[in-house]
Length: 482
Picture 1 (tube, rainbow, N blue to C red):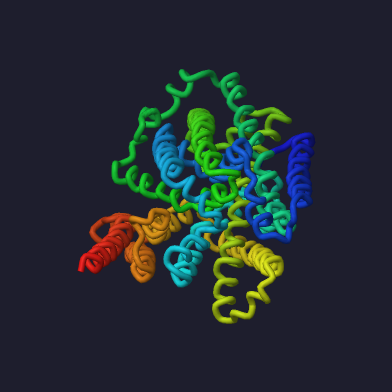
Picture 2: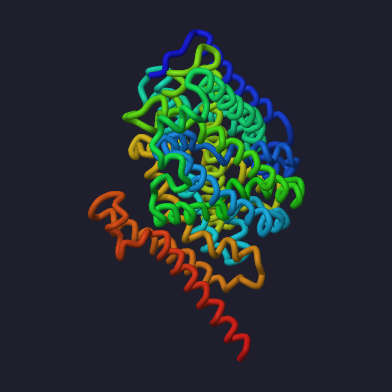
């Protein structure tokens, strides 16, 4: 448990109050009944706002970053940073303007436009699992438990409510406005702890003397296969709904492209700060039983009152900025892209009488219902599977192979295939990776050497998806030539 002075507790309470107040205040702007306003803040994000919301949203797993840095040193930067920079650059140059030009709202919208409703519904289901907020619900609950000493379940529930309540009325605009505050706080938090660590322990010489030598190597003692797996998991960037959502919401395609490129620079800076803090934790606190607590325990050992409260707020802000986005995207996917699509297909009259405003109100109502369901599911998963790393690995290796090829190809006319091939590529890419994962788990959970042929599940899933896609392109080219 972290021990706070009364002033630290006051600062943390003020932070929660500020987030909730800003979230509700943002809800007063715009016409909330309109879907474009509720889902995408009226497609009005400027470059600075785009950068702040994307930077803060894409960095929620701060406790996992601390664990990785504590265990493997600066290789965390190589494994957990560089692959994401690379794919973010690819997204910026190949997809950002194309995504914005569609004037759509979600990934399933694009899938339906390209391949029809069955593929859109399947893609929505995969997107929902990809964006499950459970890992961040768990991290926020654990952090609150450490700070208060309260029961973990109570902390999970309170953290989820504090992150979700303002989304009911404000939607995406509330998400964006709270992200702006949290962007500054996450940098302030780590900007506080590093000077204190230098003053107490010394500079780089202290780190070099007290960490294992491999912690200062680019690979951190990890095998190439391990490193390559995380590079492939970084393909997540290309199918991440939060990237697509913010491009849909940008004021223009140029804003989306430039915003992503500027965001990469801020991620590099923040990675430098978190990697350094992780090295200080390893050097100052060797033999830590729970490396996932590297940052909180470093703060406990290093920071005085006020500074400790600000650092803790920085950790909370990093997690909550991602959690509120995942909650909203998951709710949109569940309520609008799955339930509403299926509802309209079964009961076409449910689309209303052609009144656009009434249909947009219906969409907003379904998303709000999705928020309730998503909140309960996130809490349940966080309680049942209390392992952040396991959730990340499982989700990335199973879902990305199904979504990647059909979604990226949907933005390029020359790569697109007929609906049946797009659906098959998505379905069997996902099922292959899922089956491969279960085959390894049936013997010993998490033992990659027990997967068939010792191959990680992501690879066969991607291969199957690409092969089916290639067959579709070949068949269509052959038919066109006849």
